[in-house]
Length: 193
Image (cartoon, rainbow, N blue to C red):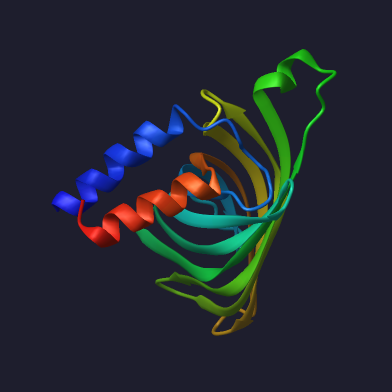
């Protein structure tokens, strides 16, 4: 527990001192904390709350890739829906310094692929999960971004239903870490300091 709290304090300290955001070699760590979406399957719609943690690595300027996990739960008229997924995501950031609003924000496009399942009391679909959509990151500090993401997700597979799809509005945050600061945090954590 002490190591976890030390790591959290170091992350907060780093977020207020690092200037780089989407440059090659940097990291992003965060999650989509809540989403509001409509699930369209056999005329059924539901309100859903979910959590999608992710870690990304900028392989070149403005392009990040990494793993993500998706957990969602919905309750509608006595029916429970559980959506899960494990896969990888990619993001491309677009900056336009000529627009005043974009001095503190960046548009991005996100796509993901992996294994996904949509399970309800009467039907289920488990298989290949694909998703894509545009988003906007607004930077509260040079390293902390609040995000909105409008996303379409499709699950193709097997089960009582061959396909499911949904459109969601995701709200979340990301912490952008410079590669040297992230390396120092990891080394300090390993040495027990």
